[in-house]
Image: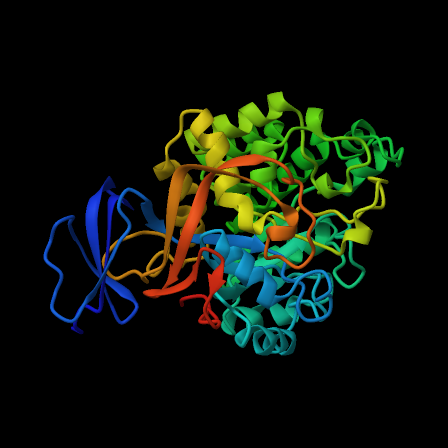
Length: 446
Ligand SMILES: [Zn+2]
């Protein structure tokens, strides 16, 4: 047992047993004890006292598109991990597409890891991709440490990452279930999308009509049916349609191994308030009506939705055009996910423990990192965010750390200022000042 090097103290520490005044002892980058607030500080240890600011476990964001290498003008590991750190996120898992190459072979994974290694300000893991023609690559990618496999059921938006048809999904799922892997799915049904009115143009109502809830519901039904047949573990990405919630709840009651995430933009922005022509709000599936949003919150409260992740998917500003049909689909929200969700959560009567459960504990569980991340508990990595939950700020896109100053949250006033973020016992950012990158590359614990 190594000597305690650091003690972090706050009157409000969020632990799995609740929020309390505590002192958290750290040695060798791990939490060695959670002690009473006024415990003595061991000789040689440094004390950091945050007073009434909240000490919470660093967030684990399992849905981020870093786009590096290949589309680094959209985003990159340097900028994305700085934005994440500034927002209280200490672990991210990178999506397999929008970078060139996509993470669909072990060689490509190696390339991605080499690029990320020197630029990561927080810990970074990788998802693999399931394509129509890479079934043979899935097992090697699993063995190389990816956390699971992403598949699309409708076009992904980039040519090098084609979607799976029903048969291909069936084949990939059988393979992944065979080695006990996790399949994560962008669930919109292509036939439903094809039969929806495709107006194009700047009117948000037309865009919303072009990506109906039914497309999500149908794709999720397919996924449930196949997961049931294969006994596979599947995860629904970025759920927007509240109509799918009863299907998911019922499948789970029947023993289907299905989990589901939603995103800050579905929980905090509504279709009614998206201005026409405002491409920064375009994402797929789309931001839906306020009544739909209320049901997503209800599902978070009752546990039907497991977790909240950003789906940070930026592009250059010129691709966020005023035509919703052709604008790049993706919301830039990495640095703002915690304050955005917290602002709405507090309004709806939730506390920070709920937010931590949705954005840290359950996401760590999803990717099997819950032995190391996702809670302030003995043995876990000393990853923390220090948050002033009652302080507000107004979002200025130019002040954010991600590469292109575009965000759907521009001008909003949000609760929750992240004062500092800590990775394995080292402060990696405080008040906008960063250290050199200290992030590590993570592999799936076997
Ligand atoms: Zn995504």
